[in-house]
Amino acid sequence: MNTQVFSASDPKTPELAAAIVRRGGLVAIPTETVYGLGADGLNPEAVAKIFQAKGRPNDNPLILHVTGPEQLPLFCHSIPESAYRLAERFWPGPLTMVLPARDNVPRCTTAGLSTVAMRCPKTEVTRKIIALAEVPIAAPSANLSGKPSTTTAEHVLHDHNGNIDAIVDGGPCAVGVESTIVDLTEPRPRLLRPGGITPEQLLEVLGDLVIDKAVTAQIDKDAVVKAPGMKYRHYAPQEPVVIVSGSREKAAAYIRRHFVPGDRVLCFEEELSLYQDCNPLAYGREDDVQTLSAGLFAALRELDDPSIHQVYARCPVGGGVAYAVQNRLKKAAAFHIIDAEAEA
Ligand code: AMP
Ligand code: MG
Image 1 (spheres, protein in one colour):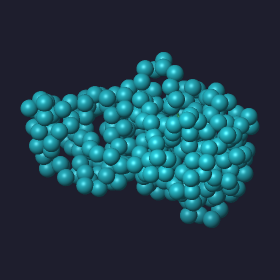
Image 2 (tube, rainbow, N blue to C red; image 1 turned 90 degrees about the horizontal axis):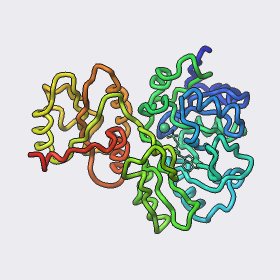
Image 3 (cartoon, rainbow, N blue to C red; image 1 turned 60 degrees about the vertical axis):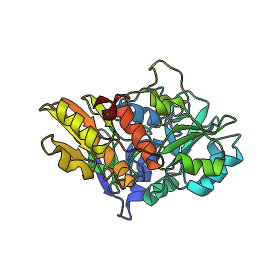
């Protein structure tokens, strides 16, 4: 199949992309978080194509993308009032809510769960496509399963050229890490995945938030968990990644001591001069965490190269958006962290 590339700014694009969705095809869509691989979320055959194109395990559910909170009752039931408060504050935006699913949502979309993940993306062209398709669009990140997420149309083309109907090119994604996921199906709201909407922001609206253990630790692949996607090795280049924590100087001393040719260093722009002989790649500025979240996946994709032996990575500290960057980088590193302060 010839994969067409549509420009997000072309006025014909929303209808062309919506037509593909309506006839059960696959179209990659830009969002503020990452590019999604979209299909009609109510059509089991279309949804099956997503799993097939990505090589995604079928126990890993998809997110349904809708035009706004008014669509929640179409696909969910027993919706708590807190869902509407969150939507009012953060939609359209990088927040996904897990709610009880109505029977019209196919169980292949929810990977057999009785709950469904709902999100309203900020990117206008994508909301237009959803509206014109007149169905919710199921879309996971458009990367091949297990690979770092796609934050540009070029990433999507790299992974899926010839295997999907079209890509809507909306330029690089601003947030760069996948949406925050909060589960609202239990008495206490639970953070399943950190993202562009921070735990602090959720707490302001909800007054309470449990952090799921999938956020902070490696989950056994056979475990039954609330966020099935979180148990797989994720976001990772093919070679081992190790995070080196501690002060700039101590970390640089540790890495320079252990570096051998074939290794790479993933660091902050402010640190580049410390790693001149260590083939460094900067993914953003430590003093501007937003640039780190926007740049992380492009950097991890660049480092996904069989000739690389090992990657030493620097990770931002603190809450807010840094919390989401830590989560993705720790998963890429399979939670392998060396404290350079203790090693000195
Ligand atoms: P992706 O879009 O590839 O980043 O994956 C979607 C994420 O949403 C995965 O981590 C899923 O586990 C999560 N997800 C989707 N639906 C549900 C659900 N009903 N309950 C919990 N997590 C979900
Ligand atoms: Mg993904």
